Amino acid sequence: MDLIASFSVDHTKIVPGIFTSRVDTLGDERVTTYDVRVTRPNAEPAVNVAAMHTLEHIIATYLRNDPDWKDQVVYWGPMGCLTGFYLILKGDREPREIFDLVLRAFRSVEDSQDVPGATPENCGNYLMHNLGMAKWYARRYADYLAENADRPEIFEYPRSERPVTEEGRQFFDS
Image (cartoon, rainbow, N blue to C red):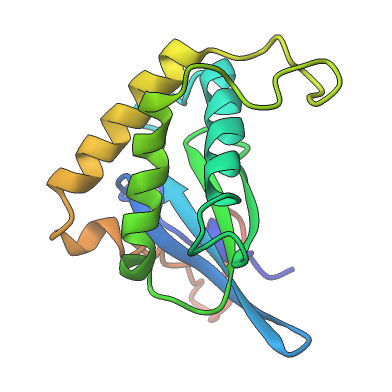
């Protein structure tokens, strides 16, 4: 089996940032999956699960209500490793083109007084939220993005090389 694109990223070198994970064509439309990496994998602790859940709710609500972007948003959700989120948008834009959107979305968390959709009727685990911690992570990430906006490494994936045997066979493990 081929190694999927997200496993070809060198997770020992990636820093928090906004990266193009993949671009797909669905029918006549192109969609881009972005890796919105909040913490440095394997070097910083994963995002607290309750805070991650809260960030998912608040930022998904923000993105789907942004007047300039709401019709472009396909998906916003957490990575299984709890180091960031996937954002899927219609179209094919460079990460720098969505920088302001992502920055505004994370800054919006600071103004939140409650968690949208955190009721038993609207959420499958409505008690697993932590607004205070979500605000902390959001502020930390937004400040980091703002301070590092001119650094190319927050927009460009570090790729890992697949080991090759003497016979020319490639390894496909992660």
